[in-house]
Image 1 (cartoon, one colour):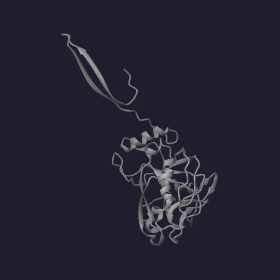
Image 2 (spheres, helix red, strand yellow; image 1 turned 180 degrees about the vertical axis):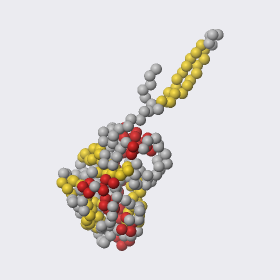
Image 3 (cartoon, helix red, strand yellow; image 1 turned 120 degrees about the vertical axis):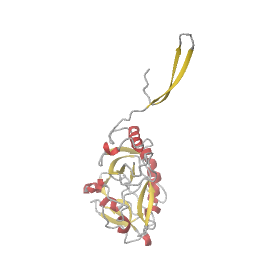
Length: 279
């Protein structure tokens, strides 16, 4: 007998003794599935999911096989506009990059009890269509309260291929309150978010240094290379939004310029959108 698939099987043995008495005995056989180790770039969605699940059970360490900078092209489904945001996005291919090993606290520990993500995964470039943070030209409430956060955790989350979506986990993201109480720190829980200024630059230029230098945030390893801070939209260097409220005005959020520098602008301006998640 040859068994090719993992699972639990019942094997039945029948024997007849010298007196002609027949005895039947059932035995349970558990066949374990062999884990296939594949690169982040070329493994099938199903193979990637199985590797992440094995890591969550504590059977492997993903950083033994994958590393920061590994890229994977995925197809996002079309995204309809979400009120009060007006940007809709066509179905498109995006490159997802492993940006950091660890670095985010999981909202729920894995099966093995691990409380930190295996990797932070972000878009190499921006979506083809630009978008706003909100329509009110205010940063009051910071990332926690802005419509773009809702969009990241609903519209964008659902645009990820359903075969790959199970690997992404909710993580804690430090945010500033913005507005007149900009020094207050809020922990948001997200499947996907926009990076904070400190996660891109490793320091503060336009955002509030109190919450971003408090040890809650650190630079993604991927962004330690200056060229990686420059994101293209439709092949052209473009501005792209961050989740950090500007510390000097209640109307602005921070962004990264087409040259990879920090800036800030009204939230109703349309710039590039480049979310990250964690596995």
